[in-house]
Amino acid sequence: MKENIVNVLRKLFPFLSVVFLWRLNIPFWNPGGILAIIPIFFCTFIRPIRWFMPFGLVFCFLIDYNLATLCYWTAIYCLCYALNGFQSFIDFEHRDFNSIDMFMVYIGIGLVISELAHINWTTFGRTIWTFVWMVILYMPITKLIERVHNDR
Amino acid sequence: MAAIATLDLLSDSYFDIIKRKIKFLLNVRFLVFKVLPMIQKSASSKILTLVKSAAAALLLPVMFIYIMIAKPDYKIMNGLAHIVLPVANVVGDVITWPVRVVGDMFDNLHELATLRSENAELRVRLDDALSQQNKCHIAMAENDSLQHLMNIVNKIPQRTVIADVVHETRALHHNTFLINRGKSDGVDAGMVVVSPSNQFAGIIIDAGENFARVRSVTDSDTNIAVNIAGYEVYGFLSGNASRSPTVGLFSDPQFRSAPGLTLVTSNISGVLPHGIFVGTTKKNSYVDVLQPRTLSRVIVLQFDTESGYKK
Image (cartoon, rainbow over all chains, first blue to last red; front, side, top):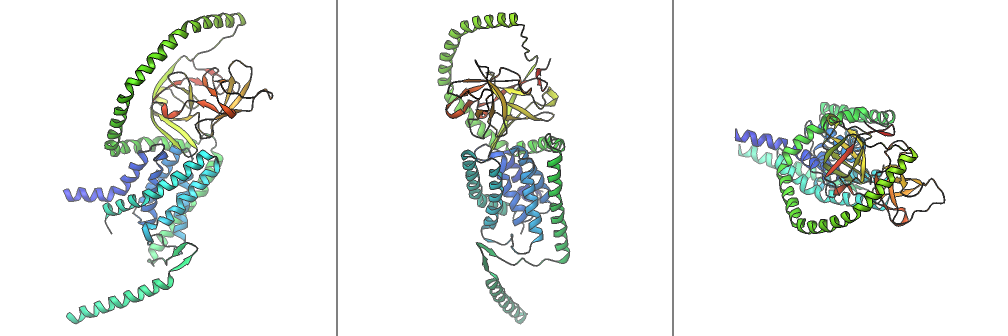
């Protein structure tokens, strides 16, 4: 019984981490719950988990709702998912440091396009900070998910 | 048995070396990205991946067309958010409660620590306000009599709703916050939100059943008509995602903004009620406005978009 509960929690951990990071939105440290993109990216592209894509889609939509960006992050997520599925050139799943370089490209492009909508020094600073902070937190969060999920 | 095991080991090490050689040969560096060959998958798995990718790709034009045609109220998207958001919030609340309890505890401790100094400051401000009160009473009485003489009728909101700020979602170039009152309390999109001290805080842009989203005065999409108090000059206040929005596009081209001017809302565009204090001007057309992060409770004015308060 206890083992079953532990196993269920392990399986649920990536999903719960997304909800946790989305709900814990704080303007400076986690604006609009944007940190939830880390587990969404990791569990969709790097260590794919079954049925994670629709879940990621819903939470990208909720991030968009928080950030008042219509369906911008949802569209970026769909675009990356489609591109990743159609290509056979870059293997997202077997790269160093949990494919942090691919994450940097993903989040970098997303933030830069978003910045272009309203360019000024304040938003530029916030964009840089968000990028750096997300890249810093990428490894700890993904390592934690790997450790807890531990099913491969 | 031992011979078979040795053979297995030998073949494993042999294939490992071959694999490593192939990997080395294929470790081509293209720009900065190391290119690795994809691990071959079965045909059915490949087809499934392609189908899923095609489905995701199909969503893109659907979203694009929807954004084009559903402007400006995005009813389907907001309707979907009204269902998903409360569910996700409840699940999120359950998961994050230990963190929030600790956070609240620190907030309360900080509040307690500053209570004494705040109390002293409030006493000084109360004394100051009381000394000004008499002057205000006289001015109000004069104003009433003048309005009566000039036959001006000022409508005031018949009903207000007090709401708590649930959370602020300041991010990148947007600054919105959620309040815990929604359609079930009579709150609807387009209504005006003010602070308890009656300073303009924002406009409701979306209302769910039990929550509403407010676009704060500092949001980059904010663009409201304002009146310079004491002058017959109107202008527009535009948010720029920083703490200080700017005022410009004055009705009088000769008019120049100077520090210390008081701005109040104007009903010239028929969107806002007249006379709510917005802020005071600073240097270079910047305006000192209410910062949403300082808000914990707000008042929603039951005001419709037909240039009048709701009765």
